[in-house]
Amino acid sequence: MPLRESDVYRSRIITSPELISDGYSAKSVYLTCLVISTISSGIVTVQLPSYDGSLLEVCDYQVDPGDIAHIYGSSGGGDGYYTVKQVLSDTTFSVNEPIADSTGGNVDFLYQAGSTLVGLDPVGMIDVTGTTVQQAVQELDAIKISAPEHEILDQLIHFIDLGGPGHGFSPAPYKETTPFGSIFPTSVVWYYSAAKTKKIFEELITWSGVVPASIVYNMYGIDGATIVQSATDTFTYVNNVFESTVTRTITIP
Image 1: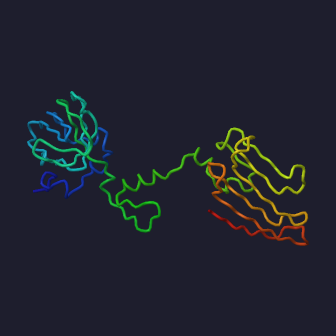
Image 2 (image 1 turned 180 degrees about the horizontal axis):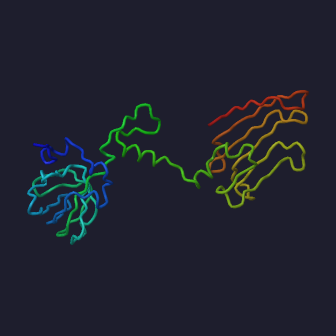
């Protein structure tokens, strides 16, 4: 006699419908029944279809902690998506989230997202500590950076040899080179505006005759006053004119 799903509890076998579940769409629903009541202590009472007699063991399926209960059509504000905390009896279960007192309506039981059931070894990873695929994806999603955020990163790579700030920092960046009129400037500063109250980036140049001996690059934070990254280029020359080497020292305060 072949083994059927109904012969084994769900906690022992993970089926393909569970693994493809997203926890919210219709394809994830495995049981629908009537709602008798929900109470604010987190208890839901249901009436099962005539062919299923118990939430503890519903034909081929068992309602498990972590499954999603979607309540809709209730009277009193009980509608919403809830996570099953525990099956308490044949007709009652508790939920993790706050729930209002209500009566009537329906509840769809949905498999939790399949990625919560697939394990992951985070050993050796830098940004991931979760032990399931779901946890790992959520952690990676949290550290993503958008295009607008990338544009305004306070990093020297966006400024050294690029001439100044681009889109995103300020609608009207302002550059000042001092001493005014000198062919050997010692300071080049980009400000957020002509008011010069907040710096974005600066170069501080030390000269050796007609060539720079060193250039210090300072990147400022959003406050326009705190240096968040700094680098110093030290130059050597052939015949005191032709650049031969550059040593860059990078500092992150």
